[in-house]
Image (spheres, rainbow, N blue to C red):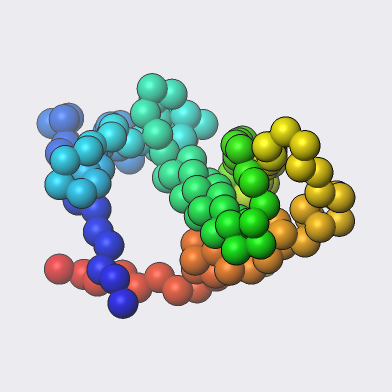
Amino acid sequence: MSELSIELFWKRREAELLPNKYSSEHSIKYNETYAIKADAAPSWGGSKQNTNPEQALAAALSSCHMMTFLALAAKVKWPVASFEDKAEAHLGKDPQGKMCISQIDLNPIVKFDQGFEIDKAKLEDMHERAHRYCFVANSLADHVIVNIN
């Protein structure tokens, strides 16, 4: 199987690491070249200028759903012209009372080539299949391994 990785870097800016008195801004590098600034969500003291883990997870799920949808649509020769989504991650608590992303809403809008129409039930079924086969969606339960170095 593939090994996919990122590089993360954080450095303390303050004299001491004290609760609620340090910056969580950090950088995440993809493919050894592309870097983004990341931070906590604004409601947790992070900057709106940076992405946050909750957005990144919603983006990963949305992107995976889209790519899976396109692969399935291509197999049945649906002429997809464009795909848009506005994914929203919601913070909440799990049944044990721990903070979590309790829900991610995907809101895809699929447009087809002129003259092609598909009924709503078939489109909904294709989105259901895309969700079922999406690698990220299938990983959101408990498949996390924390390797302490």
